[in-house]
Image 1 (tube, rainbow, N blue to C red):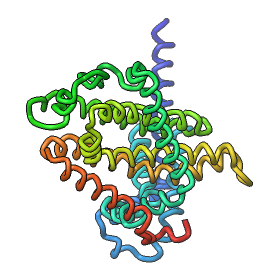
Image 2: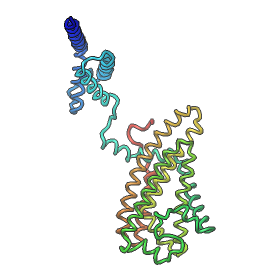
Image 3: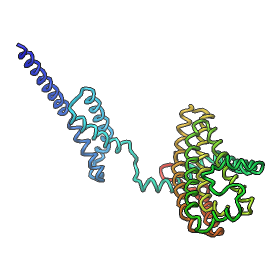
Image 4: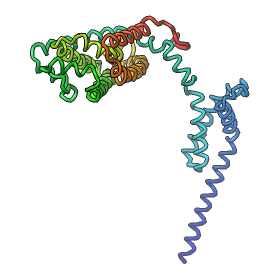
Length: 351
């Protein structure tokens, strides 16, 4: 007797499956024409055959996208078959990039970015650039003066792992050996890599912590340049000012400039949040974040450039005058690009 309920249960399951399949087929038949039309338009655009599309096709693209997106929403809620769901999800995703995605190629973006967008973003935050520069000068001065008062401050700013043999009391010969020659090349490379990693972390933190109203950014700028002041004090004590200037300049004019811009970007966000004006705090932060993000994209490229100069240029160039010329040339290039290059990138005149 128990067999019949089981059979009846099996029959009910089969009937339910048939009902679902029928509902899925009816759903597809009612809307498949729009799906196929959108798929045809999307496929031609993806293959670069826009010329084969009519004006009506281009006008219907966003309408068809919303129609198919609505179909996907209904399909998910009614638990239609997996094949239909997968097809609709793929089609909606492809169409989204054509309707809302970027309108330019990677080459086009790079041309626009370097063609004026980056320099324009830097100029738009010039008050914060000046503040960041003043803080970095103050931090260098503070680091120097504290070490003059008490040499133990040197180890507060420069960790033992980073300092190596560059410590108070080291002879001029030992300090000079770290700047020139091939005898200490491995140790110098490790020190350079550690310094680059430290400065890169500072740049990222200066920007990221700007959302705390810019206060951590202020502190990081002062603290990081205090380390620079401590190192300059150390070499000054042995009469190696000229040599350390060349050693730092070849990459430092780019790397320190990157830190300056990262700090300015963080301060810009912090200032916008603290003084939003007529905007809401979130609105002001979003607008400032867009400008700061452009600046930071360039900062990353500057850090890569500084890493190349630090990892190769400084190891291969062993003459202070040449190092200073390279560093000075890089500084002149950045200043000219950011503050003299006034071209407005296409499409951003009203940004």
